[in-house]
Amino acid sequence: MTTGTGDSTAPSSPVLRDVVTALEGLYPPSTAEGWDAVGLVVGDPAAPVRKILFAVDPVAAVVDEAIAWDADLLVTHHPLFLRPVHSVAATTFKGDVVHRLVSAGCGLYVAHTNADAAPRGVADALADLVGITDRSPLVVGDDGDGVVRGIGRVGRLAEPTTLGAFAERVAAVLPATAQGVRVAGDLDAPVATAAVVGGSGDSLFDAVRAAAVDVYVTADLRHHPASELQERADFEAGPGGTATPFLVDVAHFASEWPWLAYAAEDVVTRLGERAAAGTGEALGEGTVTTRVSTIGTDPWTARVASTERETDRPTI
Image (tube, rainbow, N blue to C red; front, side, top):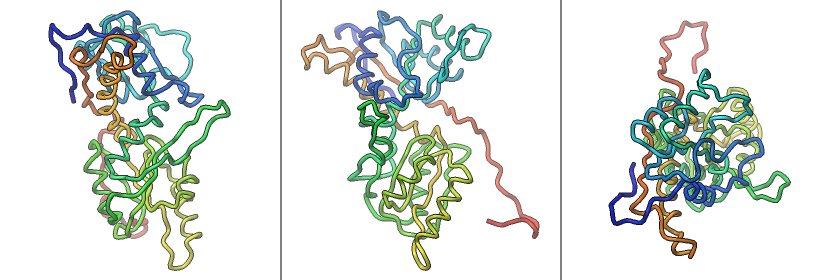
């Protein structure tokens, strides 16, 4: 996806500090989790920005894409440095990323958990694609700092369907990955309500149960949490009851990639709102081009289907 155009009569391009201001307006750093590392990682605030590439991960292949496209800024969802470091020497793979970006004149900005919860953020983008309406945050709370954070989304499906048909829709609208879509539950069971969390979501099982939804879409589901959720659902449903929520597990990368298109559009719009707010000339429209990376950064590259099993092995 590419938005924005350029011509010689358009207003001057924004500088990096303008783009950072726009991004922080969309995804306030104060709403990031306390353990997170968001914001500007690389870049001169006074440098002009004409091209912005959006991607999930700041990995070498994405940096190659940014440099080849002559991007002035790379915006990623996942941080390059989630933990403190004492060196960014080019002798390390992350240090090499920093040096290559600096040499190419390309900045790096991270919007992570602050983008998860924001309006038109990761959760909303995922909810839109899978068809959740009349929705609200799955969890609303703060870390004692007075900043409200809304995690995930929960609501009704646009049309009731079956678990199998819903899982097929999820597979169709998200980027293809080696994992595909895993499902826990009866494929013929009816589903009318759903919850979504982009990225790793098994820590929110209690909230999903409390929301009483039919199906939960998230990523990185582990054996023990998923198994215990199903056992608890079976127990609480009782004989003849329906053990919900059913689970739809997608690749981490796939669950977060849809947000990039929203971010690419919204940052240009936010730059253009400067004039309307009386804070300066309009920037962005006609001066900034944005692109969503189509490089798959899911780490898994293949899946081998199970073959015919011997009689002493379990069949699922």
